Image (cartoon, rainbow, N blue to C red; front, side):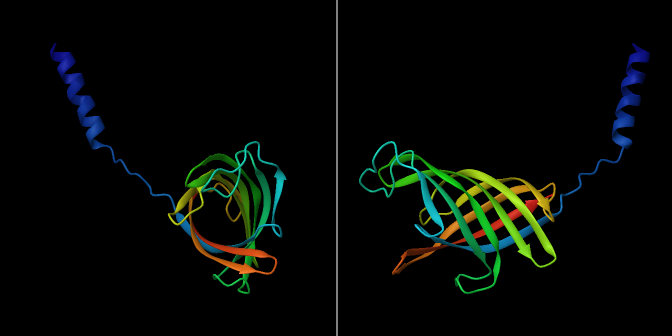
Length: 174
């Protein structure tokens, strides 16, 4: 019994004398605006399997492919930072909004700083913010993971359709 107590005391001493540290992962923030125009840089690929219900804009199963321009400010004429290319599928069209499953790649190109971020998630594109998971990256974003929060900024009617601007702020860890 005395040997057992001595062993326990030594184990407690051993565990207590170690230095335990938790290193914080370095994080970066990427802020940008997206310029979206349905019928110009967002096109239907697969028609809806079920028609839109009152209060929604699209039918269940509609799949779109897109290439949105990333800009530094909300103005479509501001500095281009890259492109976001991907697909979105309407996975629910209940009264009050459409839920989209989104999967895309952010192509960031700021001169000598280049890379991609892969992200996916579900979102209801409305006034409240939505969030996507960042699942990987290349180039300056190699080994990246994190999250990207988006929000609606504006919708401006034009002769070729409505220009929709959204704002995103990605938090990236390595």
